[in-house]
Length: 125
Image (cartoon, rainbow, N blue to C red; front, side):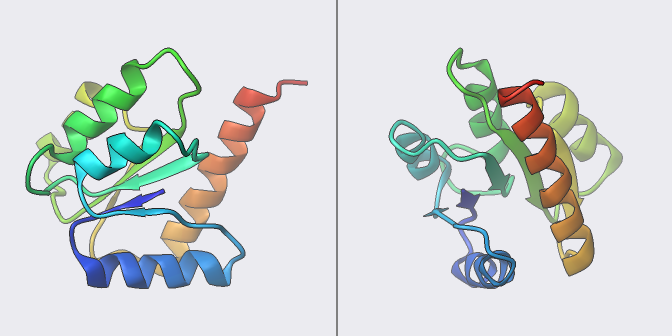
């Protein structure tokens, strides 16, 4: 699931992911993400921090606190100070944090790593 209030960012990231064969569900706000999360169970959420309404840190925290299947969360944000990254990882419990503008290879590498990690967590050997 790709969550960002910037339609252009969603378009670019969706195109990159779909060209690699990933299926993408989009949400334009934190509220929409939480609503869709009730019916769609993504393996990974790419989540912006700065959005109107519920910000990405709160969305991530709410998702991570649920007892049901918890997907990996990758914060994808222009907020990249040391405190921002710390808040993503420690407060919101995100699995990773990548800066915008992002490097396409770095983004795809992190998506692959997190999906492999998530697959192992759901299907241990």
